[in-house]
Image 1 (tube, protein in one colour):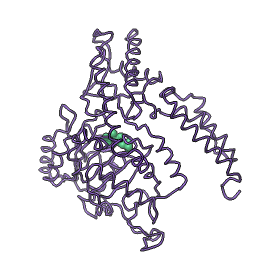
Image 2: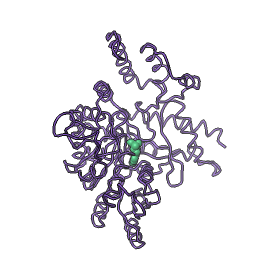
Image 3: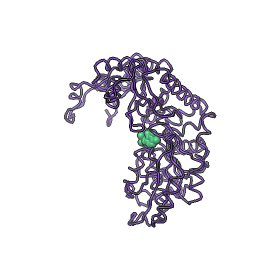
Length: 484
Ligand SMILES: *Cc1c(COP(=O)(O)O)cnc(C)c1O
């Protein structure tokens, strides 16, 4: 044995082949498995062990993985997982992660091909939405981090270089996002030192889109009060309903008011790959910065978020440092500046770009666009089922792939007003999740607890939608029979 490498490479090779076969079998037989099941307490307890002092054969560790971990994942690879907004992953993405692990590349900086792959992926991201090809960017954990980076770049733009030494220090910077914006936007304001109070919430219109007139009034009012409006965060595909803010109108407004125009397109930005859907995103190409995820609608395995910034110099001015132990050279391994570490908070960074690069090249953007359209067609099928079932009520317009609805009647007859429908629907969703048949999640729409089905998984078919609805109606009837 030399270092930590095995004496017998053939043993590791055989184990690796077994893992690969098992994982591909898992994908082949997904439909036969429950979407999700609760991990028994006894197994949780088994995971709680002291730091292992002595090692054990890797085969035995793998058996524990198969027994303790694999059966109790959240289920987002399964075609009937419709909860939250989770991507389904692909076989090729899984294999790319194996290759990335083998290379063990660190993409903080230096002169190597993996960084060129990441730069290429960022150029493709810009091209996808029509932003300039010399935009800069990074692959990050997810849109939460990408949105935070955008807020920091916008803050640096508004407050100048001093903000990096002095902090925000009394500057009365205020930003704007719709009530429908994702919770990571106020969190970014918090982490950026602006405080969540510096994010002013703009109401939505009846279609869950930011009310642009209300934004105009808020900015005018804040300017009169001596505040410094600096940033508007638009959402392309809101987390609750999939609504897309009027990006063209917001781009016009931001240009006229000299405000940073950021778009959170976490999943919705992928609609740009569909010729039919991309017009709904018109204006996204004018963004100063864009955050979105490859791990949601592009089906790249977790984690893979992306930030794209129109002005490359500004992104570097927001993060770059000069440190002796990270000196950039004109040649040798320390060349190839600027380094990704200059563009965000991380120094050591994994090779996320490989799984994105291999996914986009394997399927091509057109096929990804068709898959996005198929997900929307599944949402339309669900919407039609909801209209056809007297028990069900649609709670929000369906823009893309998210459907919010609830059970509001039982057996076609309205039940006494005393039924707590919020509680009924919450409990019903838990029943359905525990049945293993399908996993939607819940949210609040217009003050009502909604069942939320986000069709993000490329494997979901109409039969899966029907199974979900049929199971829901069956469970609702059963629960209704003993309803309070
Ligand atoms: C999922 C989501 C986020 C957060 O993205 P993560 O990748 O989970 O960090 C932000 N905004 C919207 C609209 C989202 O759907």
